[in-house]
Structure formats: C-alpha cells, structure tokens
Image (cartoon, rainbow, N blue to C red):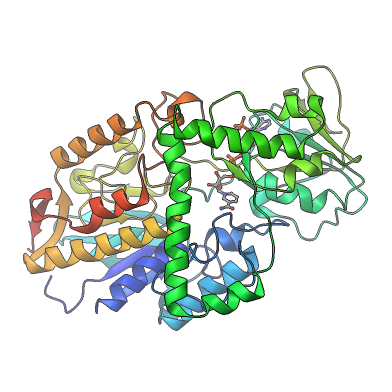
Amino acid sequence: MDRPSPRVVVVGAGFGGIAVAAELLRHGMDDVTLLEAAPEPGGTWHHNRYPGAACDVPSHLYSYSFAQRASWAHVFSHQDEILRYARETADALGITPRIVTDTTVTSCTWDDSTRTWTVRGSGREWVADAVVLATGQLDKPAYPAVAGLPDFAGRSFHSARWDHDYDLRGKRVAVIGTGASATQLVPEIAPLVDHLTVFQRTGNWFLPRKDRPMPAALDRLLRRPWARRAWRKLLYHGIELITLCVRHPRTAGRVGTLLSAAHMRRQLPDRELRRRVWPDYPFGCKRVLLSSDFLPALRRPNVELVTERIARMTPEGPLTEDGRLHEVDCVIHATGFRTNTFMLPMSVTGRDGRTIEEDWTKGPRAHLGIMVSGFPSLFLMYGPNTNTSGGSILFFLEAQAAYVRRALQLARRSGAAALDVRPEVQEAGLDALRARFEGTAWMSCSSWYRTPDGRNVANWPGYMGEYADRTRRPAASEFRFIPSR
Ligand code: NAP
C-alpha cells in the first residue's frame, strides 16, 4: 500500500461499524467509508423499536470505553437513548460525514490483479484496500416455520419491524415467541390490548431486571470518571458470572439455576402456570432472560399463555395442534432472526474466485470470528463465535476493531498490499474453540447459537477477557502477506 492510509470500506454503521471507524480514525487511518442500508446509523437500535425495547446490559457497560457518557437516564437504557448515543458518538468522532446511508451492499469482490476489493451496492461501486463487514448476527428477521402464514387476514408484523401506525388498543393480539424481544414487549402491550395470547414453544430461565431511572445519588457519583471506571469494572466482572454458570453447569450453573428458580417461583405463585413456563433444559443453554415484568404480565386476566404448538395459520388466527382456533386481529412475530448466515446473501468473493458461501457450506467459521482464510484484508465484526451469553457485545466489538487496525498496520509495516490468515492457523484456532465448548451448558439444547448438526457457531465459548487476550496481538506468523503488484 503506497497510500498514506488504506482505503477501508465498512459495511454497516451499527455499533460494530462505528467501533471500527472510531479505532481507525483515532490511529490516523482516515480513508474510511461506511455503507449503511438504513437511513441513519444505529444498526439493530434503528430497526428494533418495539414497545419496551431496551438493553439488558447496564448502560455503563453497554457503551464504548472511548465514548463514556457522564450520565444515563436508566440503569438499563431504552432503545431511543441507545440510538441517540450511537448518533452522538458518530457525530462527535467525525464518523457521520463518512456514512453513506440507504445503501445496501450486494457484493464484495477481491481482484488479485489490483490487490483491491470492489464493493457494490445500490447502483454504486467503491474500491478498497480492506473491507470490514459489520452487518451483525441479528439483522434479518425470522418468521415462524408455520404452514399458511400468509393466509392470516389481519395485521401482522415482526418485532424488529414494528408497525407503529397500527393501534393495538382494544385489539385481540397474538405474540409468537418468548425470547428476549417478546419478554420486553409483552409487558408493555398487555395493558393496552383487549386480549393477548402468547405462544410459547420453549420455556426460559429468568433473572431479575428492574427497569428504573438511574438513582440520583448513583448518577451523581458516576459523573466522576474514576467512579465510572470502577463501576464499569464491577459490572464487567458481575456479568462474567453468567458465562461462569454456562461454562460450569454442574457447579456455578447450579447456583444460577437456584437463583433463577427462586425468582421465577416468586413471580409465579400459580403452580399450573409455573409448570407450563418452566424450561426443560439446563440454565444458560439458551440466553438467560433478564426480566422482572414478563412473568407477572402472564398472570393478567387478559393474557393467556399457550404452549400447544401452532399447527398452521388460518385467516382468523393461529390454529394449535389441539384443534383450537385462536381468533385475533393482529399477529406479532417475536420469532428472532435468521442467524448463522451473517452477511449472506451478500456475495463475497475472495482469492481464486472462491465465495464465502462455498467456504461456509458446513457452517460459518472465521479466525477469532474476524478473518476468513482466502479473503485477504476482509474483516468481520461480530462474526462467527463472537456472540456472548452474558457479557457486553460492545466489549467484543472494541477488541475486534483494535485487531483490524493492528492487522492493517502489520500489512503496512511489511510493505504488503493485504494480509490473509493462514488456513492452518484458522483450523487450529477452530479446533481449540470447538474443544472449549465441551461440557458447557450451550451444548445441552438446541438454540439459535447452533447449526442443525449441533455446532455452536454464534458464541465465544469463554470469558470476555480471554477474547481480548486472544485478539490483542495479531502476530505476523499468522498471516500470508500479499505483496503489492
Ligand atoms: P429469539 O431469542 O430467537 O426468540 C425467538 C422466539 O420465537 C423463541 O422463543 C422461539 O422459541 C420462538 N419461536 C420460533 N418459532 C416459533 C413457532 N413456530 N412457534 C412458537 N414459537 C416460536 O429472538 P429474540 O427474542 O428476538 O432475541 C434474539 C436475540 O436478540 C437475543 O438472543 C439477544 O441476543 C438479542 N436481543 C437482545 C436484547 C437485549 O436486551 N440485549 C433484547 C432483545 C433481543 P424456541 O425457544 O422454542 O426456539
């Protein structure tokens, strides 16, 4: 690279895109362009605007270390405040003018003759020395695999594409799914609607999360930077305890189970309802849900929990396997996302015309979740095996952003045009990763973390600190350097 700065195209201006742009700009690499499909930055926080949308990681930890806020309105921030924070951070760090909005990238193609990437989308084209795909794991809404879904004659929408023009007041509403999104939206809409039917396929483990404004005394204290640093540390170590429980289901996991069970018993005095809500898999296998108001909402007289499977959708509403028709005006799909596909169906073509899709026929895989061998100077943010069951994803994103920056510096120092992770390094890392999942709670049920053949391709199998250690120093020996032409 003989330019003063590599030309870097970042696909996605959510928290991952902003993290990597901030890191590059801070280190003098200022030829950065972010391509964003939405009309504004913010990623998941732009799309997920369902009532009650909030983060279940405390605000002081769900924020960048390099852009700490003196004050947050809530202990667990609401969607609007997080989206505002994303916008303000992008503005403050000079990222906003580099974002090209309303641009959906459809392909990234490596050209070996020029040692560059061509990124195409929305009728335009960009040439780059490096590409960062920051499209996330949870951006494509998934709908339930239920026959006759389009037959429903009423209104229906996905939790991540909330229809704010539809007034739910006085309506008969069905919510399909009881994951993290449903857990947040059900308590909000239950008091508005005439009747709410919640369709649960699998029960969940819950821990308390009281949504409350930031206590004034704590807010005053946390305005001091030293107190904020200490608070973040405390939250960081506190939240790692969830990973401890997942990693050690027979010891720490037992404590997690007991705490969760006590919380759930307190919230559900009715034995029958409790029996139907109770999960049938070990604590931590699926995401542990943090909520203090979802289970009480199920006790409302206008709310019914249905655990019978939906046989098919009819024009009037879901028909369950017991032959019961649940007539509703509106169906809300809180059924999560098409995970495990990451940036696909975007076409990504690397060396020798190989596509990521071909490379991933047996499931997504990447070195530290960031690089894929055969795709030089292509980086992923929040890639395979970098999700966390307990920690803050922003911690992972910052580690990835630093890795991208260091790798690009390494290429520059070596006088190379690009760098490609060696296949044997990637394979050895993946073998170690797979081994680290053995004996953990993650492997004891099916979840969105796993492929149909049972591999966990979403989560990092360890603690946040381990990930930071593994990504801190990309070594020259891990790469093949591609000389300039
Ligand atoms: P999710 O966790 O994948 O939950 C989807 C729900 O839909 C599950 O309960 C699933 O049941 C159910 N479902 C799917 N098909 C169904 C069918 N045919 N009939 C009945 N139920 C069906 O999706 P999500 O709640 O949107 O959350 C996705 C992820 O987003 C979370 O794990 C988390 O990482 C993130 N998130 C985070 C926050 C936060 O506060 N930080 C908030 C929301 C979301 P099964 O369990 O049986 O599959």
